[in-house]
Length: 269
Image (cartoon, rainbow, N blue to C red; front, side, top):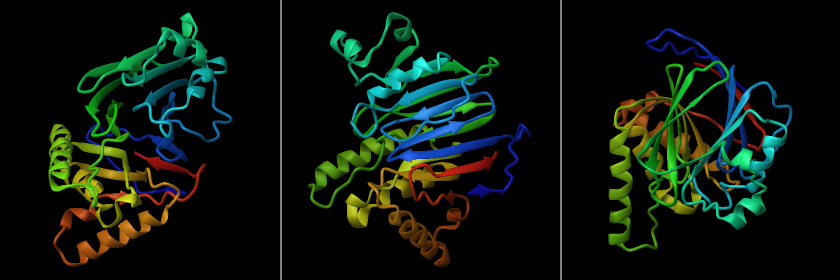
């Protein structure tokens, strides 16, 4: 699938970004000079250009966001760097189990919420990495690179449930809003954010809040538990809101149809 709409940023630069959906919340982003791998859990990682730097991001240690196989990628991709959430404890036993050698350990940056980190691509271009505090475990990532901004939520989401009491949901809402305030009014080129059908009729609240807080060009829903039909349901819901003229800002974001593992898109930014 190709998205042909051209976006002109203030710096005037244009570039192509290839996005591959791996599974659940896992995505591979390919730039001209590097790859970014987010929350790898399963999926094929074939035919990667070994000349490009591979940067691996893990938002937290839940099994559906973290697979120790990522530490084996260094065998074929020695130009690799890791940003691993601090909730993943790399004890001596873990280091042994994961096959982390001394050389590999020096390529791992453990990250904590509400901090900033830096990386570089093969050509020395800076990647600024900011972390937000998840409402579940670990972090969300906000990355700035060559004038573009990418957001991966991990499990930072408005996890409100019909079966929970009002106080619990209010506390969750306050925690979520606190993190959203940090990125309020920020322009985001591409975002990856949860749309979880397990929340039943409240499934859309977190995505709504995120899109109303920020200005997003493209959003890839994720964490939908092999029920991609929730995305079309959400798009229909947004269309209905647009038609009642109550949400003019709904025109601004392209919600991407994520349908199957291995699906790819090329976006011109």
